[in-house]
Image (cartoon, rainbow, N blue to C red; front, side, top):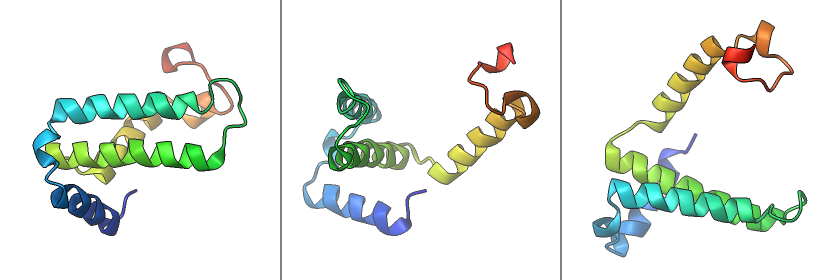
Length: 106
């Protein structure tokens, strides 16, 4: 996932600017949604979005996710791996391979 070096760089960036005071869990969750909307906007009229713009917006989404996880004391690697285990149980390979159906329709 995100390396400790990246987490530390994000923390240093926000600490230097004293932005932590604005980073409530609710504000960070809102920011994730806003930035995800900006990421989606890259694809609004075409599937061939500018890769540099997509990367910038994706970086914003990830940065806010890291900040929210930090605020909540959540280990990103642990929650992603846990979610993958749960999804693997819902979507067994033999039933889900090559299909986009929801787990209850497999």
